[in-house]
Length: 502
Image (cartoon, rainbow, N blue to C red):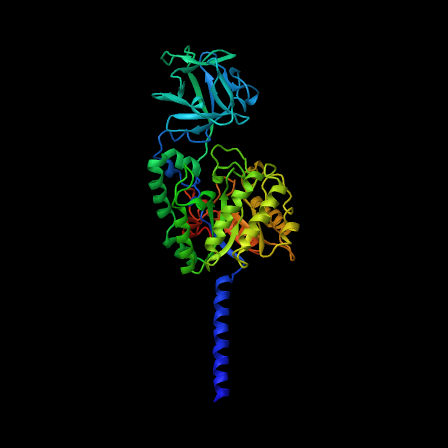
């Protein structure tokens, strides 16, 4: 009897152990390589992907980071921050480049700060003149852009002293004009040229302002990606999603203005839905304080790349928050520490210092989730992170491949684009795919390319080539993106219209 009791207890213990082991493996198992898709423009806004999100903003062409130039209609010369900033504002240039370009910081629908080339702000001097010396904008650095009815690029610029800027001579720009009128001879009239715009998270939330932005963003998060999308993704053979998030998510529900709370709840929903449909989540820190690349998807206010050593501690804190929150969630596949840091602004030393601290933050909470290190864009060796990554466990190197953004691709026909994938991209991927180091991941690619007039069959062949080559990445690939207003960037559209088969 005692022997049978012993056997009963033994088998009960053993079965319990197997069940617990099975459960543990179920929470950390990974069906590599991943076939994934990026949920871009959902929790980090990218206006080119969903332009309609900006439709309700007044003066939506004058958002934060918009680069503008002002030409005096009287003098036919441009306003300029002399020496790029640090001294007077003048109007002595007959052509415009960097010193003649101002980046807007939007205060409200018509009030702005003007940031100059060397990052100072235009303001009022002691004698009514205009200067660009302040590093922190205040009341004297705030101006209204008054646009002419019917001709919005004909403007006058009003200072906080109640007067308008006027260019009385090439060396004198003062804030002391009290008259009116829009004639060319009026020294307070300028022709405004918009050089470039940004449409990211900062622009949409600051554009709508604190009264409207919370509801606008909540409606977007609740409708752009839903549970139905996860069901569809899973049914089509995708087993993971890469979800871009911004640093402000760690401060939810009350992040620093102008960002608004609510994206964390949407990310929680994504974890719930991926678990339901048997998928994994790659949490991608896409936007960090200071901006790692100056692009609108980095959460930047004005396009300057300013992330560096002083930002590392705050960025690690975001990773710590995400790892702590999701470490025990069975859907967590990986945390990507930063998206697309740009060389040379982001130095390799600073990046490795951050990657080590971010890796340690993740490992405090989980030993099974992968940690993804994004390669630097720009002039950087694609192999530069391999020696560093070999000293870490369950680490992935992320590379992004687009047959776009270079004049080289503009000259290629369809077959040359396809050959480029099979030859050059295959070679590039092999350099970061090693047997004794980190796994490799093509974290972004798309079936869009620079050739105009491509047929459906051309897109199919181009997509098939990329799937064949990127399928050799040991961690997998992730298409950019799941939804987009431009069809060939939208994996859902491409699948539903038989352009891509997984």
